[in-house]
Structures are given as structure tokens and as C-alpha cells.
Amino acid sequence: MPTYGLYPWTPDYGYRYVHPASRLLFEDVEPINKVFERLGDAPPDRDGEWLLLRYDDATFKVRPDLFSELGGRARHLPFGFGETVRERLGEAGQPPRRGTIAGIFWNPTTDRPRYTLWLGKRRNDRVYDPDELVAEY
Image (cartoon, rainbow, N blue to C red):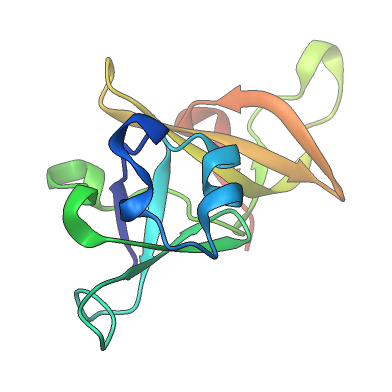
């Protein structure tokens, strides 16, 4: 079962929290309110310094200090990165589109995830609530 959590880093925290090889791309991701998948079961890596986090198809090394695992109901997200889904209803009379999960955002107001999709090779900017998507197997 994947482990998901938040990593609320901004450049104001300083760059010691993000591995030098991950800094530029991680800053571009703008991690506030984004859900990351923690890769691996061990807490930090074998050096005891870095966690490996995934967002979409990118991985990042970060210090464990700021990572907070989602708990309770939120611990089990309905969809994970790369999963194939389809829209429950198509937009404006169009048939439902099929895509893969590209981004997972955390909505602190509703305490629920929201999703963006890859539609083929193009990222769709629409943000979906979980009940607007259906898993495709």
C-alpha cells in the first residue's frame, strides 16, 4: 500500500531540505498542498538523511523533517499516480475522456484529494474531485 503525504516546503525554508540534484525541479513543482507518494518502506535512505518522494513521473530526495503522512481516511487515496481513470461524465455533451493520474492536490477545506490527468501526452488543466472519476481496469 503506497504511503502518501504532504511536504509543505517553500524556498523561505531554505535549501537544506531539498537535495541539490532535486532543487530546481522541486521548486518548479510548487509543493504546497500537493500530495507526494513516499517511495520505499524505510524511513530515510541508508544514510539517514533523505526520503525519496514521487510526484507525477518525477522523484525527489528531501529531508524527512517536513514530510507529514496523510492519516485516517485520507491515508487511502482513491487513485494514485499513473493510474488509468475516466471521467464519470463527459464535458458539455462529449463522451467521457480516459487518462492517467498526473497530479494530486490536497484540499484542506474538504480534507480530500483533487486530481489532474494526462490525456495521452497532453496534461489536462482541469482539476477533478474523486467522485468525478472512475477507475479503469
